[in-house]
Image 1 (cartoon, rainbow, N blue to C red):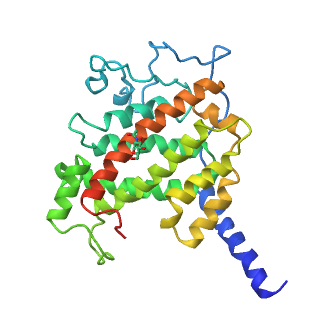
Image 2: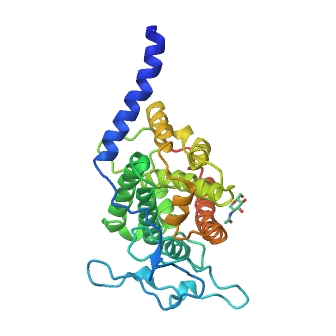
Image 3: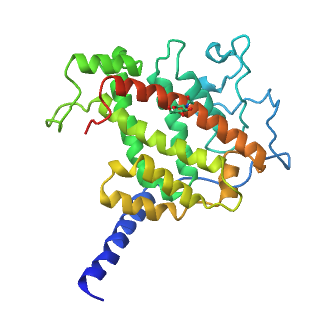
Length: 299
Ligand SMILES: *[C@@H]1O[C@H](CO)[C@@H](O)[C@H](O)[C@H]1NC(C)=O
């Protein structure tokens, strides 16, 4: 084996080992068991009375309300929002994801950052249930979420209530770093959220492909294609290699459907379809705001 070929083999292998190491630092606690209640798979059409267990602090989750939240009341003439299955005892709840990303767009079309981050919190749980394969991206995403949370709770918090307010504030005060950041300057919210925005596209594309796939389709390939399209152009060579290898360890399509809490092909497609259009709406509005201010190419 010549040194060239050896190198071609060794570099991806080293990247993979680095990824395994990184993801082992934070092993997700997941069960890929099917959603079962009383010995039968969970059904979720018309399944109203169910409330999720309270959070650790004893307060019921604010987002656990669906029908009584004013933001979610269907307007006359519009169909009621799609009701996702509840999966008791599991970390990731697709219903929480839908509720957060629905509540994140207010009637004025503003993206509310608190709800946006709550939606991302569920997406992190989704990535965790996809296995160690997503460790690297989940970790990077969590760092971005922490930065955004810091802005929201910081001294300029009121300017970080919505995406639109944040963009206006940071542009007005020269806080958006259009080139490399000078050391010591706080990380710009616009720049940080752009990372989340790109990752959101990747998940949207992946879930879309999954929802339209044939039963014998390979999730690894769908995930890799979505990654190529949405995220790879922004990642370094190392991260790309590690990510591509990691996708090979993705659970089977059947297990992925169980993660969204159904065993049934038709139901799974409906859940995935609702998720994709809910996320897609938030993505599209964000994309418009970034485009309008020429912020899409931030370093
Ligand atoms: C988002 O925008 C794309 C491209 O303009 C469009 O095809 C898609 O239907 C939009 N999605 C939603 C949920 O509005």
